[in-house]
Length: 119
Length: 198
Image (cartoon, rainbow over all chains, first blue to last red; front, side):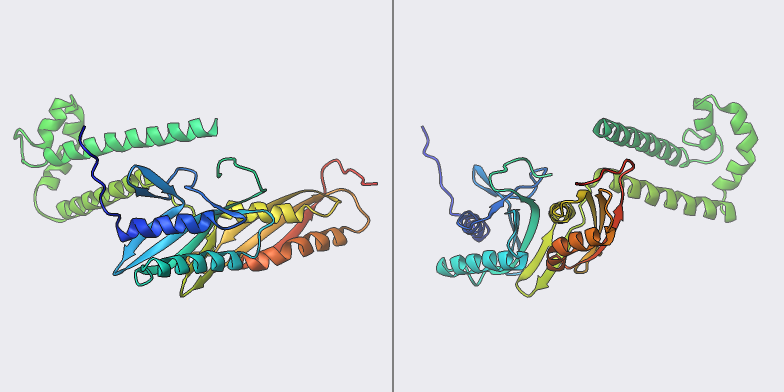
């Protein structure tokens, strides 16, 4: 059986993975791919939900599509927390020079434990 | 039901566009030759068994085929029809993108929210006062700019102090509206069959 070739991940995919980990480590927020599953980044065989990374010039802009938990903390604070976490992770991974804007889009505000589909 | 009707309307619209495009293509191809040539409008009329129509508009078609003001008007109309067709195709095929409420823009990036998420959060807060039976919230984001407007319509039980209901609901939802950069407008409506709250 031929051995599967593992290609090195691009900066885009590495940043998307970091963003996924940052959101997963935060309280009161989770990722969403959106109603029609549009907001994803392909990482080999799997999709990273709620993270879109796009190159603008030499930098990689990141969009985080999230669902916040009710009652929501101040949204500006939530966005700052996510951005700060991603900047730290990118810095630790040597990707800070590639990280561009980090946009945060709130898709829904839900009670804790509500896992229904995003409308 | 609405989804089925919407799908049907999209399908019919698409079919009409295809028919229109085919008709336009046929007219364009049969305009290549003048007179009674194989690719002339006269021949197209014969193929479609429209001889009577050809006789009545024959003079106009002759003017169309020749150079002059009629041909210029026809060329401009044709170009306009092509642009309109392309526009309709784009409108039918390109997916609609929901307008987001932009809450904040900073050098680090933008913070935005879906209208429905903002409306639903405001609705939960506006319904907190006991006398409020229901609240309907409509959020209108500005185009490309920060913030927007939110209109909260409260349905409340009969009460001697309706002003206090408005104030209470407004007080509950105002902090979040400010966070979302929304200008809040509150109004009230009594239910048709007013219920008294004990």
